[in-house]
Length: 319
Image (cartoon, rainbow, N blue to C red; front, top):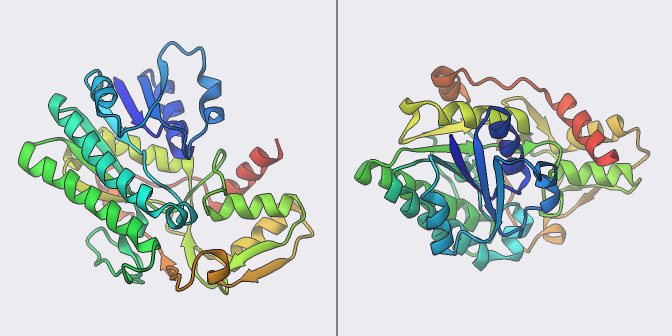
């Protein structure tokens, strides 16, 4: 199979490259390296079935040229991380919406499969537990920047479903819940790499808010496994699936666990949200996915627990 991965030099995208190449596929990546990194795919240099194109999905002629040669497009290119979205609100909205429209239009000309990476942010402040794919979306005011990410990704999903219903484009939407693992950076607000780096350096581990907010973290290998299983399932076309781990932990307990596993002498510092992000910032108190739908269709089941995921990520940072 010939696969095109948008954002393939990013954290999840680079692991998806590894998995596709391992099973014998040909992989082309388009990435503008705004949040991705050459280092994430440098180990693939010299692989004759791998090609990296440094460009943007906003460049329609290049995107169409690459899509014309693909059997499947994994669309992962997007603005990522709460901090990045708050710092770059206009670029984030344009990349997510216009970029996705470009990808879907290009894929439709060839009628190649599209796997659209969406996000748990879709659900907003809905604290239902667990969150099923048909759960309602509860968002805050448009004056609060973080909700623009949820809104733009929702438009992406609407576009993908519309292309499927009106033009029979084979599309699968995957909503990813807090993926973690080696190659992830804390630069854009991702909590686990930020905690690990602080602990290894002996700095205070900074918890935003009071740390009571609950999260579920999924090891990147399990996320990629779910993406690939759904990409091979025609019955998934035109539908939405949560992918993640459904074991919860508070951010405060996560900080304590990272300090323990790194054998650090760091202390925990609680930082008000307005100091970390922006005035009026609203956080999500709970985000636990129901993964029953993907489990029923393709047998999706995460295999790596949080402690093992943290150990592997800590070792990556040590190296």
